[in-house]
Amino acid sequence: MMPRSYNIEDLRLAARRRLPRGIFDFIDRGTEDETALRRNRAVFEHLRIVPRVMVDVQSRRSDALVLGKHQTMPIVIAPAGPAGFFWYQGELALARAAASVGVPYTVSTYAMTSLEDIVATGADVWMQLYLWNDRAISHALARRAAQLGVSVLLLTVDTPVLGRREYLAQNGFAPPFKANWRAMLDMCLHPRWLTQVPVRYALTRTWPRLVHIPPECRDNDPRVGLTQALTWDDVTHLRDLWHGKLVLKGILHAQDAARAVALGVDGIVASNHGARNFDAGTSPMDVLADIVSAAGTAQVLVDSGIRRGSDIIKALALGAKAVLVGRAPLYGVAVAGEAGARRALELLREELDTSMALAGCVRVDDISADLVRTVVP
Ligand SMILES: Cc1cc2nc3c(=O)[nH]c(=O)nc-3n(C[C@H](O)[C@H](O)[C@H](O)COP(=O)(O)O)c2cc1C
Image 1 (cartoon, rainbow, N blue to C red):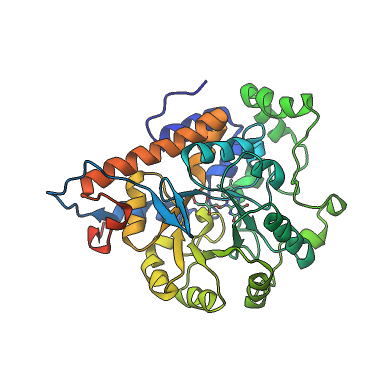
Image 2 (cartoon, rainbow, N blue to C red):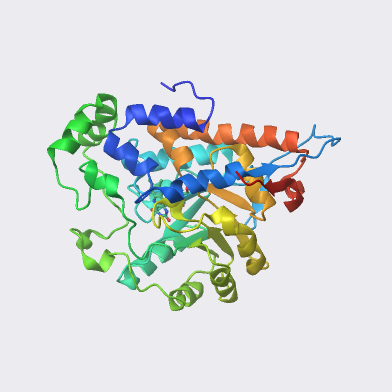
């Protein structure tokens, strides 16, 4: 049953009711004092659109050309492992929702459904890669994606260590997760989630796991620990290995953007990982214009804090070609699987369409820098 939802916040509140607190917080929260999380929203609120009038907007369209491919709107579903905890086979639900509205879906390295099964949904699949200590295992995953026809590889570069997610320990969900009474009670108090997610996995004997970690590497094997030694040499190596579009996700400094482009990357995602890593770090929207000018002909995408269609206009006005959305479709999938994720995407599309009309834009290419002003609160 799909609850009534008129905006992403409605889906968020419905997800909060449905999920155990530990799991909802894992999607929703930031790190340390959560200043970055608040800033990710504030930066959009302080940026105002200065609309144009006397424009015939009857035939407006929101389709966009992103990394050489047409999509129905300038949105990509961001990588978010492990969606299989939020909904039974959550990644398949997200991929199908993305396919049904005509936008790409990015598979996380930490997905719980195999890349092969996700590609089989027919979605336009992008692959996100974390580099592990054993580079050969990560490179094998990239080659596997290439063989499956995945056209975009998104290397996440902003996570040498995990940010301090204090709430995980508070909720009894801190890694390495072990059964504890707080987490168990939390799950039992959410019987809809319990029966529709873990019980379903148990009945189908498919207990979710991080399927892209090779089976011989279980139990915190250091070979598949996130590398703390990611350098530009890794980018050079991947550029040789990967012949499709290569995108770096998690760039915030213009000099890093310039360096990436000099090494031949095709795109950059300006991102602070949805405020899940560095609480003292800047918001990508604060530095987007600098990154766009440093990136030259490479396309710049942005994420972190997108909750409204008008946010997309603001991002495009500062030079982004598209936005990634992380939590918005996750709230939807947690509430009603594929239908919920589709609802999230449709809400964003409807809001984008309304905002384009009110701003006086007929095509996404009409969205230009003069349409936005920053106001001091
Ligand atoms: C639950 C969750 C899991 C995530 N997992 C990954 C991941 O595996 N790889 C990655 O590069 N980013 C990951 N991210 C970050 C997103 O890709 C994206 O950068 C962020 O969610 C965008 O901010 P937003 O949630 O405000 O839209 C995750 C985000 C969430 C909420």
